[in-house]
Length: 209
Image (tube, rainbow, N blue to C red):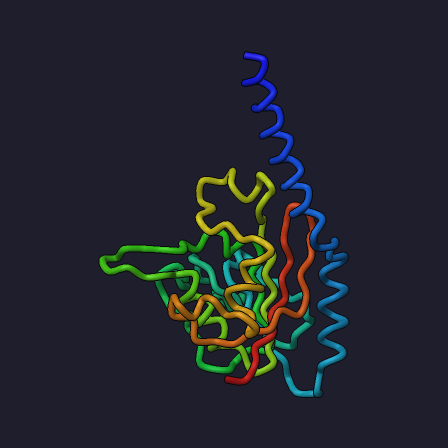
């Protein structure tokens, strides 16, 4: 019995140490709005800029201080320039290369990784294709999502897409792009990642294809 308890204790200790190692791998991101507005100011050419906030709720966010702000949610609001779309199964209702920025706050974790409807499809990968499509070359995606190993990533029963520090870097960055095996057709580079605990902040820039 003593040996069994010792093994259980050691197993739990290793899990805690592993979780701590994941958490400290990336530094804290710092103030997101300050970073985004500074990035936008450093890259602005003088032309009108547009941003799209997906899963925006009642008010689209605009951390990059774009001139025109649009949103997508499951409730349409023309007054606030919010269009309806269920992005788990539908495309983004905008044309190609329309936006300088696209933001996703507390949203990507709700997009399924796999669906059978009736054939197998990969909604998260499809959405990343759509994000790439509507962003202009050089456009930036900002993702702000609860992520592994924090409990907030798992405790909500509608969280079906658990993001980790390696998700964007391994599957959607142009250095590896492992998501190509699932149908990803875009090309991003990860500009910066960091923690706003328990949220992982990821900025990806669209590259020319």
